Amino acid sequence: MSTLKNVLVAASALAVLGACSKQAEKTEDIRPVRAISLASSDVDVNAEFSGEVKARVESRLGFRVAGKIVSRKVDVGTLIKKGQVLMQLDPQDLQLSQAQALANLRAAETNRDLAKAELQRYQELRSKSFVSQAVLDAKDSTYKAAQANVDAAQAGYRGQSNQAGYASLLSDVDGVVTAVSAEIGQVVAAGTPVVNVAKSGEKEIVIGIPEDKVDSLRRVPDVQVRLWADPKNAVAGKIREISPVADPSTRTYTVKVSIPDSLAEAKLGMTAVVQFASKTPTPQIKVPLTALFYEKKATSVWIVEQGAVKLVPVAIGGVAGNDIVLASGVKAGQTVVTAGVNLLKPGQKVTILGNDGVGK
Image (cartoon, rainbow, N blue to C red; front, side, top):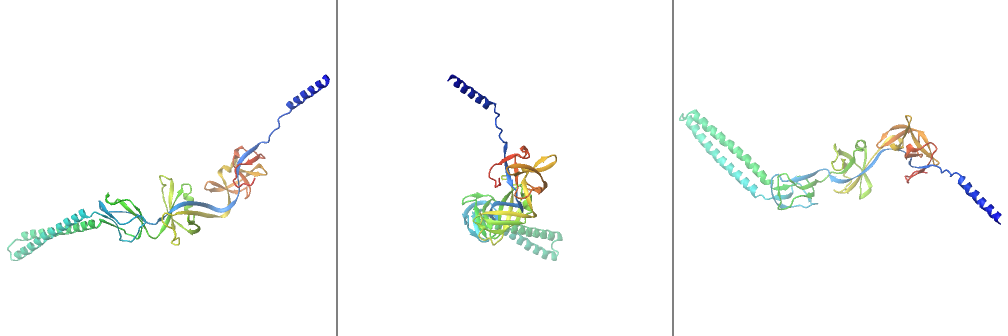
């Protein structure tokens, strides 16, 4: 019995020693990467930007004279006609100035009439040699000075009459009131904007374009516009203006796109989408810059086939925005690694991270 027990103990010891002597199994190195499936397309630029429908001409109107507002005739959204009164100032001071200018004109006319009558009398006396030519010349100068005073007084009166008329703020176009920035009782300085008026007629969409796309989108001929309220109705637009400087707050460049009158449902303030699209003569294959692998002055990409990678030389055909155009070496449908290219080696097994529409 003891002999059998010793045999079992020895066998167990040998089994333990055998297990310890076995080497740990090697695990295959599978590296995670990101990849994309290549596709060829003749679309060179395809970008969309949201914007706002605005009037082609929108004016900020203000009084030409200072004063206290005593009447407001319109509200935001009011449809107005050319010549319609929008606001009025207290006209009392302006009317007093006008009356003073009129009184100055009457006084100047009286002095002129007196100087003219006196000149006529001295002309008769001179014809009879009762006065000298020097005296007649002095009377003539007095009359001309009086006439000049009348002319100055008339100009002053016309100016004050205009000033009195400026107490009423009139619209110079047909349109709609988009903002009111002053109320009754408020004292405003000359030129202070008090009413915003959008002119009826042409409309446009104002968008902001990032600085890295300004030059490429500037040359795009195909511009489509559609309203957020009616996304299925797309019409052709036209770039009217591109700001030469970036907005200081958004750091984008303001672009104004004219829209045709056929888009009658476009109302001021509506949200719209502007789409830019252009095509190349032949289809192109583009990859991100991160997909390129540089070694020994050669440019290559890693192609994923059956779960492993292989290095394929490529020729660069140009730059398209943030992407690189590949002229040769790859074809549509192949899977290319876009992240982790510097950590791979030929034949290495990989697993593709995420779900980027890549066939694995």
